[in-house]
Length: 187
Length: 190
Image 1 (cartoon, each protein chain N blue to C red):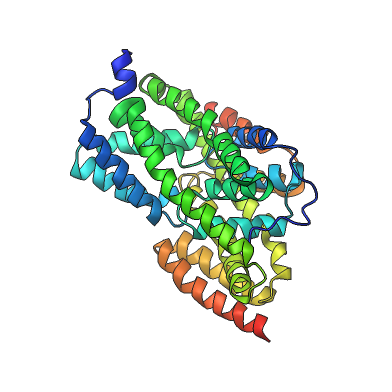
Image 2 (cartoon, each protein chain N blue to C red):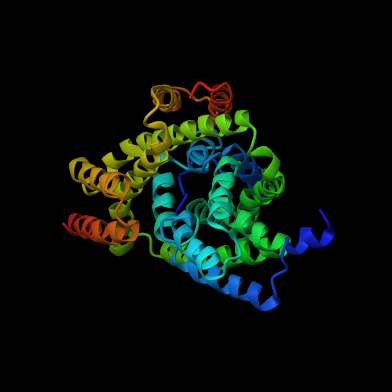
């Protein structure tokens, strides 16, 4: 890979294009309620549909690759940045995705921390707690989708839940076991 | 709000927070939340389960990646903006490097059947990890002012609406969240 390819990606986007990407991702950052992955449909519309910087298959592969790698789900934004514009593209998409939301989160939590005994803040946290747990279970359920037609994969999901609830083992071992079982072609 | 007073122990420095969040991120395949609970609540004991749910609730309502918002809040509580920067950098720096190396190699890797199979197996485990994280914090709802039965109702409705019926999450959170918060408000007023 050339230095130019590393920095700017395969087809060099103009500075205007990069700025547009940055601004669009900043906008999505503020709409990303419920996590970064909820903005993936709109990113797809913008990058594949509107600008044709990536194909559909490239976009989907970017998301899948980030899911398989260690780290937060938001890493898929970095892979998309890489595929459209090398390291400069990564800077545009990742900074765009993170700057507005982190600034807002920091100021909102400081505001809330100062008023944590107020009835409004207490009603907010007490009201949101059951929904938060429901969203976790829903995410787990959605992630089982590819496994649901394979009994061995369902057993693997169930075993994971049991080990996590009953033992203090690191999830890393379970992930490694999943990789081995999958690599052997059992699920 | 994300108050961590009464947490069993505190991190020693912003550097320690960077290290813990880096290690946490590296264990997180298919998302970091399951590992976050194990590391932050059970191993490091920087927060209780109830504090974890509270922080996560806020992280989910605010826009942006939930786990990044959580790291930001936890770091800020212990060491101000230095802690916030250290925690978020820990979460992102090494994983970004790894994922970009993988992206650069992707063309060669994706054709190997063992790699595809291993990814499938890891995906199934990732699903189980997220579910276990949710199940483990259910007991914290006993201390909720709304009471366990009402909380269970909101929990089940949220799971069905988002996970099974696949309604847009923003409407579920705004709609059910408003009802749940209104009920919590009413219970707190009495």
